[in-house]
Image (tube, rainbow, N blue to C red; front, side):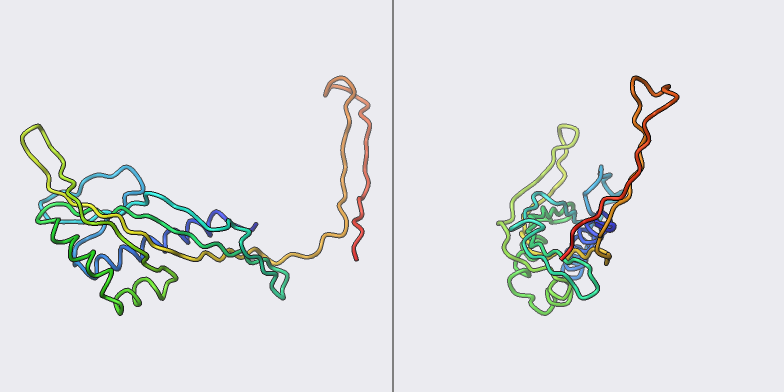
Length: 194
């Protein structure tokens, strides 16, 4: 498949950027993606982080296959992502409580930031406390919720031409690669097409 890895990365980036955009538009807080080792932002300003907790699909990449007129293949796969959303500093509990409520009521905002990009909200957990004890006597306030989103990935392969024959050439060495008279084979294998 043509640049499948790049397509998957771009797809996942779109999912996270869309979710982060929605959260930022609803709360007004900066949103950080925790997909690499994470360094806590300096200062005392509140912020939100998101990270993927689980990913699953229904039916795999072969769920639906369509051959386009130009000969390219199109694979469709439905995915669901559970995303951990955490708020820190300030008063994180009410921030996530408001965000949780928005998932159920801000339909126009969800349409603009998520639905139009192929991402739908399915459900979310209750908001829970996620405080972190620092240095034994200080506590960093935090709150967490887990949200589940559904997406549909369409992978398109490059158009190809039908393979009707394969040519090959090989050297067959008898005992070692130092063999000065290897057996040389060259031929063409033809496929039977209908």
